[in-house]
Each structure stands twice: as structure tokens, then as C-alpha cells.
Image (tube, rainbow, N blue to C red; front, side, top):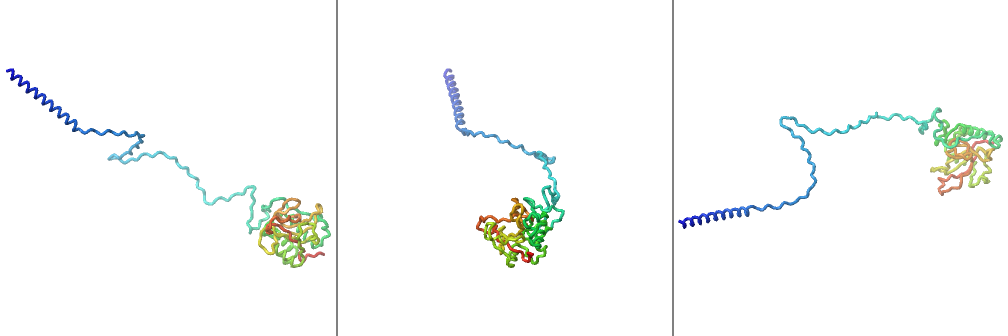
Length: 306
């Protein structure tokens, strides 16, 4: 009986150990059969970007709505200008300037282009020996002095006082034609030729006013220069005036004509005026076209000395 109990106990012990071994083996198999997870890589943290909120989606049965736009500034509307600018009004300092082909009316400012000192004039008794001049010479010079009192400016290309001014040869042309001289050339170069052909010309080469070359100079003679401005002409005469004589007050030689800057009594004048007759300084340039040079003087053809 004891042996049966011992045998039964042995069998139950063996069975228990066998069941335990089987359970342990199954567990070990499961451990080795399960794959080992790969280690996680550590990523650098980055700033989270703001995720825009999704636009609202249309709900079935409802109208699609769009997001309300943010309010923007209303652009300022510029005032529309009418086409064609209004006529500008002249300021007090402005004067109407006529076009080259326009003759200014007497109501306009007579000489808007004038500058420098006022025009100068002389009376006949302010000129040495004026009363002894030949009658025709006095008539011509009286008319020339009368023009110096009209406040006429220097107007290039003009030979008519009605234009408000004249240029140098225009003054000579107007003065001679208005006093009975015929076939007077219009420009200074041809006036020079006119005098030369009459055989009444005296050339001057000296730079000194007391030179013997001035011994034949008489009131009423025409005076000629070259090189007062740059122009291509033959002969190259560019300026002319008429000789008055000597002023009593200063004993200086004086002349009348129209100039754009010659002097009288030390002041520049622009227009028809009395001017000092003096020789220009020696040329500072080899180009004679831009260096004023006094050429000479001559008697007006047909001017009587009686």
C-alpha cells in the first residue's frame, strides 16, 4: 500500500515538473519570437509653424461663404483737372516780350530787354564848335541826337524806331534815309563798302587816339569796327557809328549810334545813345573775329561840307 502511494506521488511530481518545463519553454519561445523594436532617432526640435486655420467648408444645404476680407484704406481720389492749362498771369516783374515779327504797340513797356545805365544824350551847345559845323552836318547830327532822347533799346535786325529799338547799322540806315540820302546799304559791311567806293575812307592802324591817322576825322563821319561779334561776312565789318566831335565838359571824342554795351561816362548803355569814342584795347586773342578792332572812318557819300 505504501508503495502504491509512493509510486503515485512520483508520477504526480513528474507530471508537475513536466508541465512546468513545458510552460517555461513556451514562454522562452515567445520571447525570442517577438522582434526587438528599433531604437528611436532623436529629431531636433524646430519652431512650430503656425498652421493657418482651414477655410470654412460648405455645409450641404447651405450657401458657400467666403471669409470677410480685412478692411483696407480707401484711396484718395485726385481732383480731375480740365484739359488745357489756364492762361498764366504775368507777375509784376514780368513784361510782355513781342515775337520777332511783331511790332510792339505804344501802350507796351517800351524796352523790356534794356539793362544797364539809361541812354545818354547831349545838347548841341555841349559839343565843342557845334555852331560852326556845316548846315547839312548839323541837320544830320540834330536828327541823330533827337533819336537818343526817345529811350530806344538795342534791337538786333531792326532799322525802325517803331520797333522800340534798332541795331547799329539799322540806326545809320534810318538816320541817313530819313535825311535824304539815297541808296544807303542796310548792314555795316556794305555801308563800309559804300564809303570805300566813294574814295572817302581813312584807315587806322594805330592803337593811340592821338595818332596822325585821326587828323582827317570830322563830325558826321562814319566809324567802322570788325570783330565785335562772330559772323562770317566779307568784308568782316561788324559795327558802325557816327562821329559827333568833342564834348565840352570832358574834351573827349563822342559818337552816336546803337550799341549793346558800349560805355559813356564810364557806364554801359544798351540802345540808341551817345557813347565815348575810344579805341579798343589790343586783341587778347589771335582770332580777330572775337577781338574788336577799329578799322577806320570815312565821309558819308553826298554829305555836303558847305
